Image (tube, rainbow, N blue to C red; front, side, top):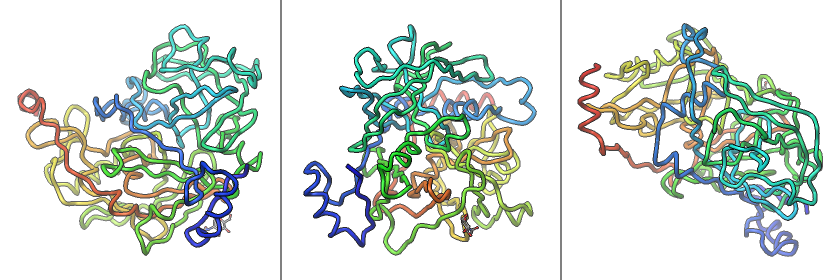
Length: 413
Ligand SMILES: *[C@@H]1O[C@H](CO)[C@@H](O)[C@H](O)[C@H]1NC(C)=O
């Protein structure tokens, strides 16, 4: 069945159709795939690791001067995953939905020491089609994953994608991650010569609208969220707002131009006389990771922020907010989301960190506050402020090891 999409206007009409076609369909006709906050990453909340994961994913270092050493290595901590059925009968895998990569990578039972909780077993699937084309990923630190590309059926909610190209992991140099069984890339397949699962949905005409939309929730739904393939859930958006679209500047990653960043009275574009700022919208990145000059400018707007062990730390409490200006409209991130775990002396790890790249990566810190629509058909990205109730936050400062951390910081400051 074709997925039914809707805007709030066509709601009543669509309910009737959906109710007839599929009794399991939700009342508003949008098929939501829940995305779940990983328990491991919630427990560890190690922002430094998630920063390194982003650097490794993009082949970057912390700073330009570190480029040669490629010192960055990491054990990935994935913040969010969704459940995806692969094969016939379906095997349910926990996958990260990653708009910052394009391959559909899954752990398999063929791999002797692979990551994951429930790797895919080809022998159990009647729709599996073997392949011989090899693929591999190799990182700057020498770690790698490799295998062959095969095909099988993939089911997301009520959408059945036939013959989806899957990058099977058959060998892994290190155990990348035990919290998920793979990564479902949702950038443009062209980066790696693959066809993403959403590109398959378009080719197979399984969705009415060539868009998929992400909602990352905070406290309201225990940090989970949802993705909708083929539609937009206008009900997530703060009333009185529309979706602001900006064209993708290069259809590889979800590259967009950000006009300005505003923090307190500072404007990056005015202060540095540069605009626009190339940015990648990445659901698979936790923090805001950017060029050193931008990161230094950002922290110069926050009194008492400082460098600590090559990372930026900021006061845990504050009232400033960051505005990201896209197509003339400001999308904000409150101060609570710009601070991460407690370091000591009222200082927290900053959600904004450096990279050797000359572009910015807009991760979940930004997306938790703004609904995002990835429009594959029109090659543009849309943003709208999330409803206030979904954005509600509590400041959680982890005080568990406060004393130990304080004395450590005192030694090093
Ligand atoms: C975005 O791209 C579309 C189609 O390529 C074009 O018609 C439109 O003018 C572009 N919008 C902007 C603001 O550049």
